[in-house]
Image 1 (cartoon, one colour):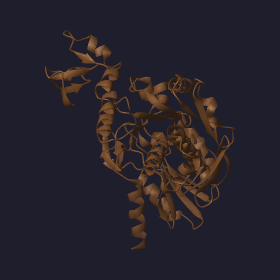
Image 2 (cartoon, helix red, strand yellow):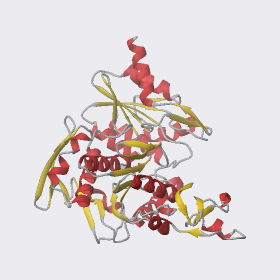
Image 3 (cartoon, helix red, strand yellow):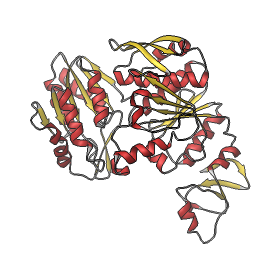
Image 4 (cartoon, one colour):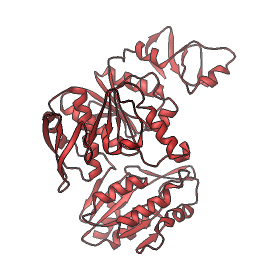
Length: 432
């Protein structure tokens, strides 16, 4: 990475020991220390904390959001609310890097390397941004890819089964998530999911729908979007959102509480801008209204439950699969959840990666034993077509797992595939 200005005569900075040169400064991290120790000649190095100070990033207020589901929506909502309130936030996550209402970098990992994150902070700081909102994955916490960063606020959405291919057990996954909330940093926690983690109670605040919380939903309606009345101490406010689903009520509460803690503005002033945020591409995205077809990223049993439960006033048809080379234990659980809520179920491929698609489908189908109206079809496009062809006027079709992804990964190759475009093409073909 080329340095934005001359520093000790170095023109570049790297965290890769194989890319060292006389004009390159080394960023030493927890991840690369074992490789650094193997070098015969140790280069001059800098730590992430020192780089933050050197680049003048200490005055940026960093907000980290972690959880199994909701990270992308909550960070995007915080970013949107702050923009509408006249602040200058930046946003980093799976959808890329954003500042000044523009995308600066394309999609990346949920939480990239610490060097990339600091470079993104530097870019946006130079644009005048005073907040840096970021998604924080469990992998990043475990691998210390956020080391050296001082957070103004840490936010917890929920913790359900996911990434067990990496963490091994749900207990280890929860332990790693809990590490993020172990210090004295100001934190905002989902009170309705509070038992899923442990945390330092110092500077801890909460939001909740059912449970008593710092930011508490008093009443709500999920008809024609989301309308809710909320209370914080003696302060009361109401908001309306075009988004759908109970889980999005939780996401919006996390964002409202975060912005209130950060800005100290009147609660109603924050609630007044909520309606301007329509959600995130691929997250409960309405692709067609007639017939009603919605695409969502839900890829865990809890994520699928939340999506299906949010539409339980309709007859549900659902298309979904499970990713290959990932936690296999969640597959039958995903099937069981679909069987509980949906009238018609189409089990298909997600990103099979190196696994045989039919074997993944078999794992899911174990949770659907004895259920009727279940179709197994490895060809995702054909599965969507079958679902559309059988869709009745009172039904909603939910296509889950890939959201706004525009590819399908098979045997190391990413083939162009976008659920939303497939739906539009198939519907256009029916009308022709």
